[in-house]
Image 1 (cartoon, protein in one colour):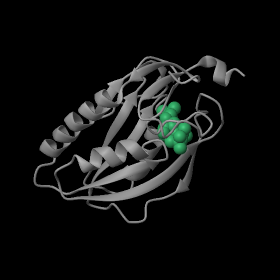
Image 2: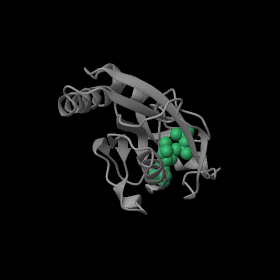
Image 3: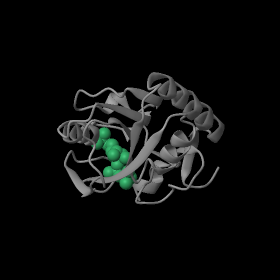
Length: 179
Ligand code: PRP
Protein backbone atom coordinates (compact mmCIF):
# COMPACT_ATOMS: atom_id res chain seq x y z
CA UNK A 1 0.00 0.00 0.00
CA UNK A 2 1.34 3.41 -0.93
CA UNK A 3 1.79 5.70 2.03
CA UNK A 4 -1.05 8.17 1.30
CA UNK A 5 -3.76 5.54 1.13
CA UNK A 6 -5.72 3.94 3.98
CA UNK A 7 -7.00 1.03 1.87
CA UNK A 8 -7.96 -0.15 -1.60
CA UNK A 9 -11.70 0.34 -2.03
CA UNK A 10 -12.14 -0.99 -5.59
CA UNK A 11 -9.48 -2.96 -7.49
CA UNK A 12 -8.67 -2.48 -11.15
CA UNK A 13 -10.12 -5.92 -11.92
CA UNK A 14 -13.41 -5.00 -10.23
CA UNK A 15 -13.49 -1.70 -12.14
CA UNK A 16 -12.85 -3.40 -15.50
CA UNK A 17 -15.53 -6.06 -14.91
CA UNK A 18 -18.16 -3.52 -13.84
CA UNK A 19 -17.37 -1.11 -16.68
CA UNK A 20 -17.91 -3.98 -19.17
CA UNK A 21 -21.20 -4.87 -17.51
CA UNK A 22 -22.54 -1.30 -17.59
CA UNK A 23 -21.33 -0.82 -21.19
CA UNK A 24 -23.22 -3.97 -22.22
CA UNK A 25 -26.40 -2.62 -20.57
CA UNK A 26 -26.07 0.71 -22.39
CA UNK A 27 -25.38 -1.07 -25.70
CA UNK A 28 -28.56 -3.11 -25.21
CA UNK A 29 -30.70 -0.15 -24.07
CA UNK A 30 -29.76 2.01 -27.08
CA UNK A 31 -29.81 -0.70 -29.77
CA UNK A 32 -30.37 0.90 -33.20
CA UNK A 33 -29.55 4.43 -31.97
CA UNK A 34 -26.45 6.55 -32.03
CA UNK A 35 -25.42 8.17 -28.77
CA UNK A 36 -23.41 11.23 -27.76
CA UNK A 37 -21.22 10.51 -24.73
CA UNK A 38 -20.38 13.64 -22.77
CA UNK A 39 -17.23 13.44 -20.65
CA UNK A 40 -17.18 15.71 -17.62
CA UNK A 41 -13.55 16.63 -17.11
CA UNK A 42 -11.37 15.91 -15.41
CA UNK A 43 -12.32 13.14 -12.99
CA UNK A 44 -14.20 10.94 -15.47
CA UNK A 45 -11.41 10.77 -18.04
CA UNK A 46 -10.29 7.15 -17.45
CA UNK A 47 -13.83 5.88 -16.86
CA UNK A 48 -15.04 7.61 -20.02
CA UNK A 49 -12.19 6.21 -22.08
CA UNK A 50 -12.70 2.64 -20.81
CA UNK A 51 -16.51 2.78 -20.97
CA UNK A 52 -16.80 4.13 -24.51
CA UNK A 53 -14.37 1.51 -25.82
CA UNK A 54 -16.67 -1.22 -24.47
CA UNK A 55 -19.80 0.25 -26.12
CA UNK A 56 -20.94 -1.40 -29.34
CA UNK A 57 -22.98 1.46 -30.83
CA UNK A 58 -22.29 4.30 -33.26
CA UNK A 59 -21.19 6.97 -30.81
CA UNK A 60 -19.78 10.46 -30.77
CA UNK A 61 -17.76 12.15 -28.06
CA UNK A 62 -17.74 15.63 -26.60
CA UNK A 63 -16.17 17.15 -23.51
CA UNK A 64 -17.23 19.62 -20.86
CA UNK A 65 -15.29 21.09 -18.01
CA UNK A 66 -17.12 22.02 -14.84
CA UNK A 67 -15.81 23.07 -11.51
CA UNK A 68 -17.56 23.14 -8.20
CA UNK A 69 -16.15 26.10 -6.32
CA UNK A 70 -13.90 25.51 -3.36
CA UNK A 71 -10.90 23.36 -2.56
CA UNK A 72 -10.65 20.55 -0.03
CA UNK A 73 -12.70 17.39 0.21
CA UNK A 74 -16.24 18.73 -0.23
CA UNK A 75 -17.94 20.69 -3.00
CA UNK A 76 -19.53 24.03 -2.17
CA UNK A 77 -22.71 23.76 -4.19
CA UNK A 78 -21.79 26.46 -6.68
CA UNK A 79 -21.01 25.25 -10.18
CA UNK A 80 -18.93 27.04 -12.80
CA UNK A 81 -18.65 26.12 -16.49
CA UNK A 82 -15.02 26.17 -17.68
CA UNK A 83 -15.56 24.61 -21.13
CA UNK A 84 -18.85 24.01 -22.92
CA UNK A 85 -19.57 21.31 -25.51
CA UNK A 86 -18.21 21.92 -29.01
CA UNK A 87 -21.41 20.95 -30.84
CA UNK A 88 -25.17 21.30 -30.41
CA UNK A 89 -27.06 18.35 -28.87
CA UNK A 90 -30.49 19.11 -30.29
CA UNK A 91 -32.29 15.82 -31.16
CA UNK A 92 -29.43 13.60 -29.90
CA UNK A 93 -29.44 10.83 -27.33
CA UNK A 94 -27.03 12.08 -24.67
CA UNK A 95 -25.32 10.19 -21.86
CA UNK A 96 -23.42 12.30 -19.34
CA UNK A 97 -20.42 10.40 -17.95
CA UNK A 98 -19.23 11.38 -14.46
CA UNK A 99 -16.76 9.92 -12.00
CA UNK A 100 -18.72 10.59 -8.80
CA UNK A 101 -22.01 11.94 -7.53
CA UNK A 102 -21.74 13.42 -4.07
CA UNK A 103 -24.18 16.21 -3.16
CA UNK A 104 -25.68 15.92 -6.65
CA UNK A 105 -25.32 19.68 -7.26
CA UNK A 106 -23.02 19.35 -10.29
CA UNK A 107 -25.12 16.82 -12.18
CA UNK A 108 -28.37 18.47 -11.26
CA UNK A 109 -27.04 21.74 -12.78
CA UNK A 110 -25.68 19.92 -15.84
CA UNK A 111 -28.83 17.93 -16.47
CA UNK A 112 -30.92 21.10 -16.29
CA UNK A 113 -28.55 22.94 -18.61
CA UNK A 114 -28.32 20.19 -21.24
CA UNK A 115 -32.06 19.39 -21.07
CA UNK A 116 -32.78 23.00 -22.05
CA UNK A 117 -30.96 22.35 -25.37
CA UNK A 118 -33.64 19.87 -26.52
CA UNK A 119 -31.77 16.56 -26.74
CA UNK A 120 -33.83 13.48 -27.78
CA UNK A 121 -33.02 12.03 -24.34
CA UNK A 122 -30.55 12.56 -21.55
CA UNK A 123 -29.22 10.05 -19.04
CA UNK A 124 -26.49 9.97 -16.40
CA UNK A 125 -23.81 7.29 -16.09
CA UNK A 126 -21.56 7.50 -13.05
CA UNK A 127 -18.63 5.42 -11.89
CA UNK A 128 -19.28 6.07 -8.20
CA UNK A 129 -22.30 7.19 -6.20
CA UNK A 130 -22.32 8.40 -2.59
CA UNK A 131 -26.09 8.58 -1.94
CA UNK A 132 -25.60 9.30 1.78
CA UNK A 133 -24.23 12.77 0.86
CA UNK A 134 -27.05 13.81 -1.47
CA UNK A 135 -28.40 17.36 -1.05
CA UNK A 136 -30.68 17.36 -4.13
CA UNK A 137 -32.97 14.70 -5.56
CA UNK A 138 -30.88 12.99 -8.23
CA UNK A 139 -30.55 9.32 -9.20
CA UNK A 140 -28.10 8.12 -11.87
CA UNK A 141 -29.48 5.97 -14.68
CA UNK A 142 -26.32 3.85 -14.72
CA UNK A 143 -23.98 3.45 -11.75
CA UNK A 144 -20.96 1.18 -11.37
CA UNK A 145 -20.44 1.32 -7.59
CA UNK A 146 -22.35 2.74 -4.63
CA UNK A 147 -19.79 3.68 -1.99
CA UNK A 148 -19.79 4.84 1.65
CA UNK A 149 -18.96 8.39 2.68
CA UNK A 150 -15.18 8.11 2.48
CA UNK A 151 -12.78 10.33 0.53
CA UNK A 152 -11.67 8.33 -2.48
CA UNK A 153 -8.95 8.93 -5.06
CA UNK A 154 -7.50 7.18 -8.09
CA UNK A 155 -8.79 6.12 -11.54
CA UNK A 156 -9.39 9.80 -12.34
CA UNK A 157 -10.39 11.03 -8.90
CA UNK A 158 -8.07 13.49 -7.24
CA UNK A 159 -7.16 15.22 -4.04
CA UNK A 160 -5.59 18.57 -4.84
CA UNK A 161 -5.09 17.32 -8.46
CA UNK A 162 -3.00 14.34 -7.35
CA UNK A 163 -3.63 10.57 -7.64
CA UNK A 164 -5.74 10.72 -10.85
CA UNK A 165 -3.30 8.30 -12.55
CA UNK A 166 -3.67 5.51 -9.97
CA UNK A 167 -5.16 2.32 -11.44
CA UNK A 168 -7.26 1.38 -8.41
CA UNK A 169 -9.66 3.39 -6.27
CA UNK A 170 -8.32 4.07 -2.80
CA UNK A 171 -9.60 5.61 0.43
CA UNK A 172 -7.25 8.51 1.09
CA UNK A 173 -5.51 8.49 4.46
CA UNK A 174 -7.20 11.32 6.43
CA UNK A 175 -3.73 12.45 7.56
CA UNK A 176 -3.15 13.69 3.98
CA UNK A 177 -5.97 16.25 4.03
CA UNK A 178 -5.77 17.18 7.70
CA UNK A 179 -2.11 18.20 7.37
C1 PRP B 1 -16.26 16.28 -8.78
C2 PRP B 1 -16.95 15.22 -9.63
C3 PRP B 1 -18.30 15.81 -9.88
C4 PRP B 1 -18.57 16.60 -8.61
C5 PRP B 1 -19.47 15.80 -7.73
O1 PRP B 1 -15.72 17.25 -9.64
O2 PRP B 1 -16.25 14.99 -10.84
O3 PRP B 1 -18.31 16.68 -11.01
O4 PRP B 1 -17.31 16.83 -7.97
O5 PRP B 1 -19.81 16.49 -6.58
P1 PRP B 1 -21.29 16.99 -6.28
O6 PRP B 1 -22.23 15.83 -6.54
O7 PRP B 1 -21.23 17.34 -4.81
O8 PRP B 1 -21.61 18.17 -7.14
P2 PRP B 1 -14.56 18.28 -9.25
O9 PRP B 1 -15.16 19.64 -9.13
O10 PRP B 1 -13.79 17.74 -8.09
O11 PRP B 1 -13.68 18.31 -10.58
P3 PRP B 1 -12.75 17.20 -11.27
O12 PRP B 1 -13.67 16.17 -11.93
O13 PRP B 1 -11.98 17.98 -12.28
O14 PRP B 1 -11.88 16.57 -10.21
